[in-house]
Length: 287
Image (cartoon, rainbow, N blue to C red; front, side, top):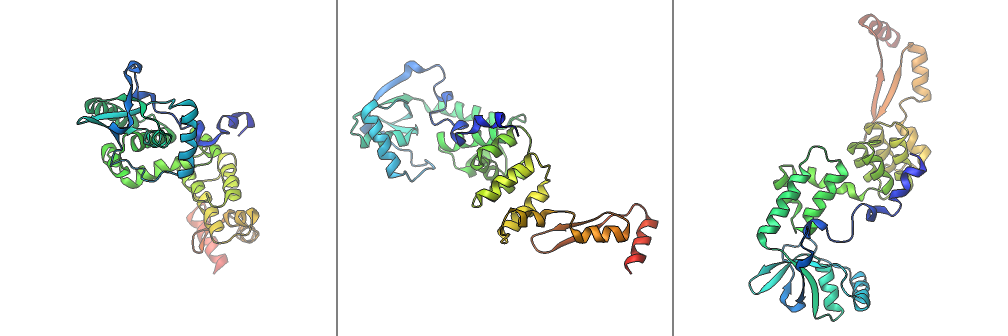
């Protein structure tokens, strides 16, 4: 990949996943932004996120003290009060900052159901890239408080499939770019994800898959070799190679192509033959 293609992802996932609220919540309802009393608002008990980092929450609270809440939260009516749909972190920080009110957009349950349905239909589109699907799934998870299991049911997909797609957002920026540009496949991406604890090996694998023409099987063999203790990149590459000094020797003696394919345990030796007669010839040489 050329350098000029990769700079757009230099800021990491934040370049792909906006920190602010998805504008589909607002639509053309900017005039609906209201100042609501913080005490009339309660969190959604079904919110997937249960833990909030105290340090970053305090940093946001300090920012709110200086600048106020710049992005409205989204709530839905609940009796005489309101329940948070999106923006619980901002709400908690505003409370911590001592704010009495917070800007909010009030959405009825019917409006939210329509938005959720539209989002589900969008994720189901066949022309979406894997990363676009992952972003859609994360919006359903974060902004509609849907569990991955519920999302899987709504999308008609297996839970493992939804989890695997969602995990693609944890890829390094270079891998996300390569996947978006179809330099690598989802299979390559999953192998790259498996090396998140080995950043040097992960970066090498991205290049090998995106511009080195490695197959998914080669990528998986590289992962296995790293996790089995390959000391460095060269050692790991040696486990991936289809051709070794030994296979070259066999190939020369048998007058045909010989490849080694390593697996998690052991591997297999592949000897190519072009016809039944050729197979008989090779067997006689070996026997």
